[in-house]
Length: 318
Image (cartoon, rainbow, N blue to C red; front, side, top):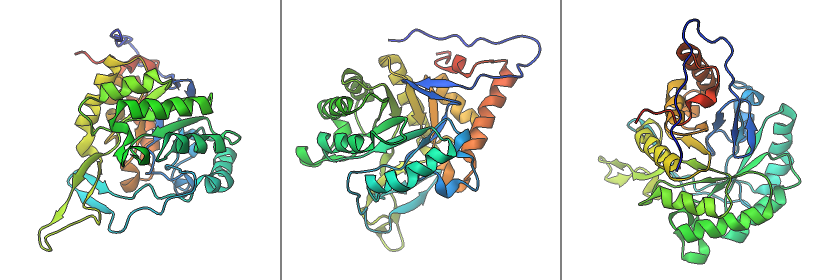
């Protein structure tokens, strides 16, 4: 369990120089903002709007060993205060990432977190092993994939499956391992503890919540697979609660996400215990949202007299 951090404020003149650097489980970040996997590709498509080297990190779209075709269309549906997606982790595979996207990110001077997907512990590890000679700064392990060795059960809903995957990934690399947790569980803290026991350096949460949308006129679901992942502002209250629970329940640094669109949104996650944050769905309606969130965090710190962004972590008065 963590102790409470008191938010220190300076009286008098506002602080003009704010330290925005954070360390996420051994990953140095120039500021606490990265991108949520699957919402930013690898950054190339956003280069006209955002200087990727100015971000705390770029988190790539999930990559699998040989590539996945993804789900049938329609696979995106707009919902009140959010969106549903059922993309199915479509990706061209690890070799494409290594030959096309990682060299581009390296040339931009970006800090890189690669999101790793797989259907078994060995498959996750094989992706990491294939990337070990590349310009990767950390791995985010997406445990929301179905486990073929367990009859298709989502890996991230079972502590023993999470522990097996993270343990195998830990053997494959010395680079920071961030485990991305699913919110579709009874106790997210139990899953976080399993990741911690297996050697994770940090956790990220939340992934999308299961939901569905219906077209009353056609009497059909709006997604081909009926059910999809809900993201956007609608999930923010759930995400904040889970970050707060995990901050109190484990000692791992937290990458918080879920409905972040402004600097104040990001600050709320940090007050609940997040070391860093990820911007996801906001990238679709504002391609420069990551830069605006960074500016918003710094503005908040200046206005509040906070000279180090790390002072915000866990400073919730609750």
